[in-house]
Length: 59
Image (cartoon, rainbow, N blue to C red):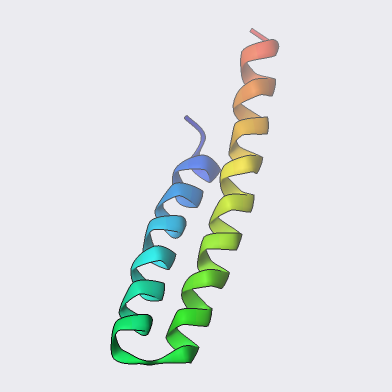
């Protein structure tokens, strides 16, 4: 698994936690940051999947 993919999955998890904590304490900014982290994490994971596919195809 590529570094980007691992970072993406991790960032999605952090985003989910931020979003949940923000919602629990009524902090809309933290919720928004969590959503943003999840989106960026999804993009990184997708890029990592492409990199993994390219590496697999070139073997």
